[in-house]
Image (tube, rainbow, N blue to C red):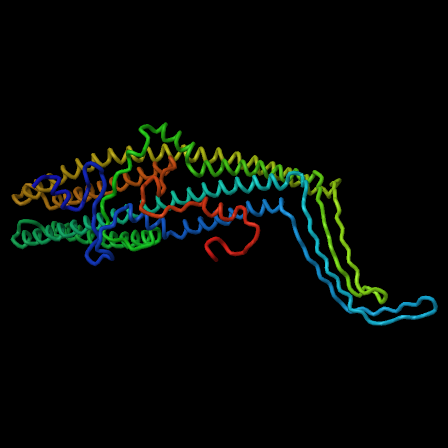
Length: 466
């Protein structure tokens, strides 16, 4: 049996080419079918409540555009008044008195002709907010999928660690039985037995901790993915999607990361908001038409009809200073959003270097851990043989067993870190999405809802019928 086969059977479960794990859940797991990372991410894409909530938020932002466009459209108001009135009129020596039921019906239509470009700039501001919200949605999608990758690999790691700790416990229990047998025939001392018992107790503690860690990892998996973990399989490598150098990763991140792009659209929106505020200093021109009918307005008239068309020009002179404060405020918000672009760029640059270093380190760590596992496996076999002939102490055997378990655990952790670091870098360059990963899902397109509501003039039902 080859060394690689022995290591695989000992539940490190790595694929030498990819450095990733292939571990199955224990007997009694929820699903019998194998569950790949891609299928888990597809479930998260469809089921994750944070992502679905952000989609709803993006649809809400879409409505800001038809709200802004309403400034170009006419307004129509109808007014009805009714009441009871008593009149007494004296004319030409005669008195007339009586009760009336005066009513009035007024229909007013107003069309803005010029509003200081407020409507135009408000529309552009809303469109920038829509584009920014789409980038925020894309950023949320990346975060959810990266959380899904992390949760998936954490479950695999927890299963592997639990398996290793159980194997370690079984090996130590065997060593304890052998030590007790040798103690009964006088070959070792009571101290050797006590050392073996202590290691067994410590291994039992590690097993219980590994069980708790697996339970926690499965709970997070259920939270992020939306389903219970089944029999998890080895994820495919996405390292070919990553640029070859860290400088290219940084450049791609600065140009494509949704957080950076969302902040840039926020700058554009803030610029138009300044223009909207400045519109308060400009004149307004509108045309207004009104038709009305009044009934029983006096004892001497039955009804009266009227119609009028007026052109109204309003020139602001002084409004208490609020318009000037609003303009200054909008300019400060613009400055803030420009600085936030730099903040996001610096964050992406730092994360790109961080994840690149983590990926490179994990590759070296996997090679070192594989070598350590191979060496410690042979060392443990040798120490056990020497212990049987009295050339090694019980402590030597226990230490060798611990070193092997530690190196196997380090290999599991390094394999998990490599996968997570690779997906983190794909996220940095803005490609951790359903389309780039080729997930088998119906891809959500935010532009569909936008086109459905952009030119809507009336209606309270949303496009999905709610």
